[in-house]
Length: 198
Image (cartoon, rainbow, N blue to C red; front, side, top):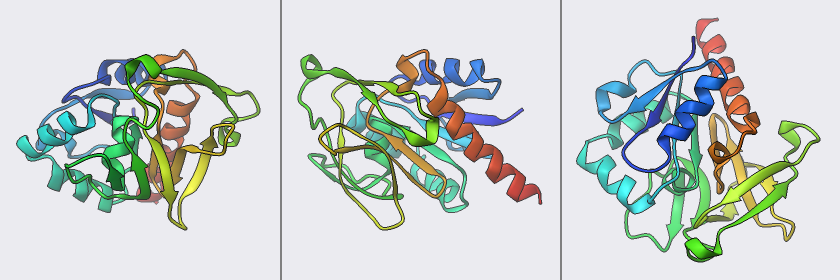
């Protein structure tokens, strides 16, 4: 069974754990640096990016997270998770992990009352659109040359991307019954584990 951690400092970690369990993955909450060891993959959930970032520092998780990412362990960041993975963030005092070559703007669509839903074309998930839930969502303002845009809003704004083993979405796939994004992430975990075993 694949061993996938979900960072459980704040935010929607329980929904991610439930989604991964439904797909047969061994998912569990991660709060301490020692719990990051031996993972096949990690999810950084949505929530309050500043709060999660401060708690990461407080619990001394940053160094271990950076080591994990440097080793190529797949990481999936949703909403606040995308913000924390980014190289640069506008509207945030705290330094993100800087792991993914994207620039992100926090709360780009407004406050909680400005939350919305949209059907997105996501070719890597197949022909059927993905119903995405945006809550105080960020957006991607710039992507580096090695970043693949997975989905955009109708106006062309990128809202999901992949760079090597890192996947990030501005929306919350864990809040729908459509498990295709989690399934996509688990295929990356599988590929990495197979390559490691070869």
